[in-house]
Length: 67
Image 1 (cartoon, rainbow, N blue to C red):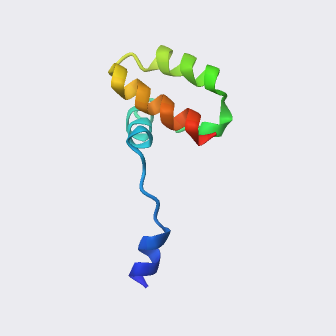
Image 2 (image 1 turned 180 degrees about the vertical axis):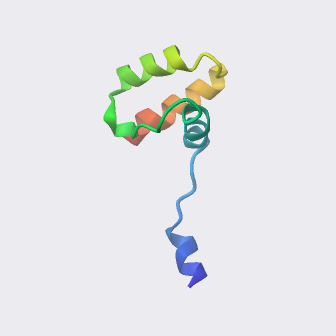
Image 3 (image 1 turned 135 degrees about the vertical axis):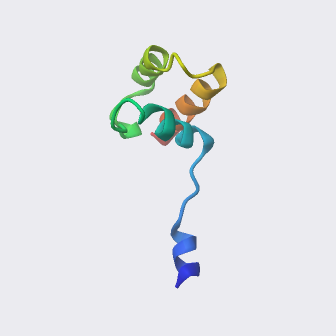
């Protein structure tokens, strides 16, 4: 039974891990399909001031590729 559950699990990308850890420290997680690419770029730039350039890139990649 455990093996069946393991096959159902999907591993999170680095971008998703960062998004969930960094962004949830200030607010609830917003589903990636809620905004378009342009809006996500604006939000990450505005609210991601404490993230490195690489972290922002990974988060944006996750959010945009999700759609």
